[in-house]
Length: 175
Image 1 (cartoon, rainbow, N blue to C red):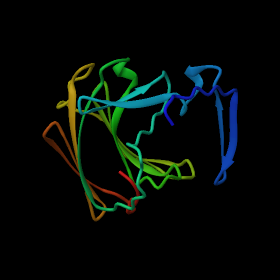
Image 2 (image 1 turned 45 degrees about the vertical axis):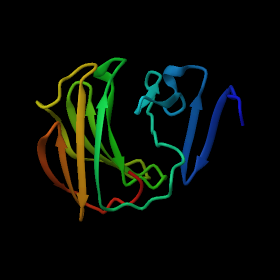
Image 3 (image 1 turned 90 degrees about the horizontal axis):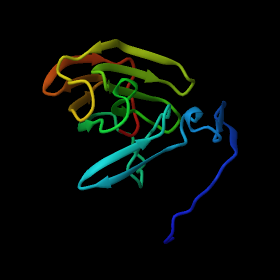
Image 4 (image 1 turned 60 degrees about the vertical axis):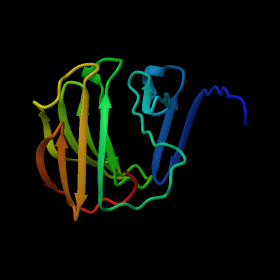
């Protein structure tokens, strides 16, 4: 309750919902979900990750949510690492089964909108596009505004309205 715990794993393997998982902790560069963390400092939420890690971060405790309509504003800044290999943004419609929709901005200023379902299938709503409103590189903040109402996703980045996408299904879950 009062001290940090250090746990060392060899390998983790398992099956859940028809999916097989494997993490080899002997090489941080090969682990895709296991080596990341976050902290809050001066009112800013920081996400830390080792190379090649996909980090899913939710402020804890995570409440059970079934959001279908929302407005969300996030300011994001890459402060370290290789911006050519980093993307940030918002995940919504996440029901905890590896199904979700992502709006991502890469450190090189590319926008992607992708839906992944729990079976591992991906659908790109738009091909990645270069955003003139995003300054590539480190220490440049991008403001992302999303509104989802009746399956229509409106996207604004750095006060530039990028339009509305009609989503195929109603994403329901956490944001």
